[in-house]
Image (cartoon, rainbow, N blue to C red):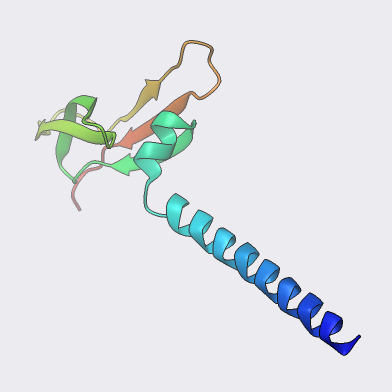
Amino acid sequence: MPLMNIDAAIRMEVGEMYKIIGCLFCVVLLAGCDQHIARHWGGTMEQKVPCGQKLEGVTWKGQNSELWYLFRPMRQNEVPETHVFKASTTFGVFEGQVNIVESLCK
């Protein structure tokens, strides 16, 4: 009888270990990949443009869903703006959005 209790305890500890490993894997998977998540799974992310720069264009490039930007120097009479770049899907299920924020240099 005592062997069965030890065996059950070991199985329970291994099960708990798999849960912890699974949770850690999900956290690592989701951390630091905002662009990929925003594009493929939906959601919103914010990207700041370097101060004093004006956004000219933005696009997704490559297999890893890298976001590429085209900037130019901001002219004296221009004001900072916020641009919305959306990725839409056929059925509208996983629609992502990137808010691109310009700013003046202080």
